[in-house]
Image (tube, rainbow, N blue to C red; front, side, top):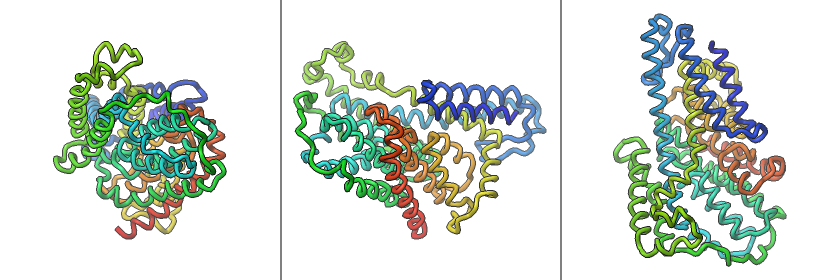
Length: 464
């Protein structure tokens, strides 16, 4: 039965990675895989000899001795436990996405565009690289990529030039998301799972992540694509900036940044702080939308705006629900493998068979090569299930350097292929970037940055 469940997982995983070839949204195989895996567990419960107790984080070797009713009760408790942990991540993401949409409702991101005054291609590259790096740490790498490419489309009319910037934005956004607990879904998973803390994440990963961004951008600044100046750009079609755009930008970003502080002070799960931040931002959004500004804000004839002036309702309707459902499916599917102890067997085989590099991580005996391969793997396979699997594979203390290296590798390794990260996929969609163009032009830059950052991490951990 275990072999069948693993086969279902592998086939579902394959369907996710071949999303663009199969023309099937990855949320579909993720949800089907999750449901079938748990159904097979329920049907074959009496045939399993071991079970992983998620509450105690330990294998139950006497699972085979329990009667059917006790096994069913334990399975239901485990399923509920994993659903709760997954819901924490999903509710957190929903809150963050809604705040970002509220900022966009008030055209808040136009404030960032107004800071870009130069026409030098090289200077614009550096400006957008640093914006992507720091903005992704605040509003996550996916959202930062969407925002910055949207601004690029207003600044640069030539798509052949723009896709170069988009490629470097993907690298910078993924690097920026790695050192922040709210910068990337995988880092958020490690943070919410109490594997890393905000302070240690910054100390261990800021310098490696910064180098992962700086080195590719420095090399790219000497390439022909970034020489000279941009041609004149017509700004006449820009959406008029309203008087609350800057206020909502700073309020929204401030609300998101306050979440780690809230968690540190109250020790409550991060999603509680995110809901508080969303509530505060929504209050101001509703107040501002009920002023005279609301009557003149939307001149496009948008029925949603004219029918009611609730920015919260509008923003909730713009949430990327397919991504939320995908995370639900993949995290619960990985939880199924964890519950049967399959991931622990895989982890043991890795530790026994992978060669050590002489710089092995302390205590757990996992080689750096294993974690580096996880980073390379995240370029081919979605990094969410890889990190979800690592959560079940390794049982080391909070803030162990292993978790920080996993956060770095999974967060930045995906830049090596356009389909390797959420930021890359959205850039691919927005700019119609060809897979092989990215592989030829951008992938080597991402690889160099990834390796430089990894070496920097190995050096950093010896200091702290």
